[in-house]
Length: 171
Image 1 (cartoon, rainbow, N blue to C red):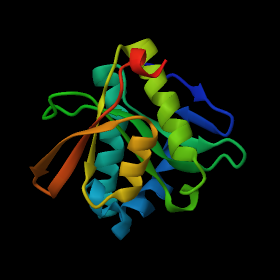
Image 2: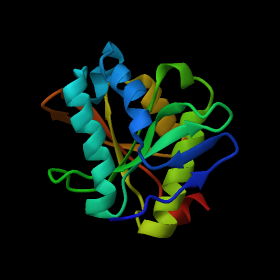
Image 3: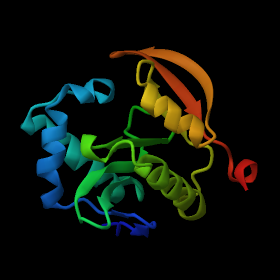
């Protein structure tokens, strides 16, 4: 099994999934806030999604990290690379639990994850698939230097494809 690397930022720790992360994440999945990321889900479906995210480390050698707030030790969300079988490329994605939004954690964690992916996994210029009404995620992608590449329609409706810059473009 792949070992999930730990990334530390000034305020956050990006690390492996733990059983103790599931309750706050399952609660998140029950809310309407998940409408742009495939939810809402009941606890059983939340477990499936949680497990799939954790399993990508074993199957792909990279995946989603749990975001832990360093000061409190609380689960703040998850962030990282997502590439299920039906994707044709690697996505960098992010979800913060409601109590942790608006603090700059998304940017801090996403930039750390993207840089790590470039340096250790060879993931350069990943995309972010963002539901068109999800203005907060659009703002984060743009703050990270990603640019709108395309608009597509999927089973859940229209979504943007944002392209992140290559390492050469942001160094």
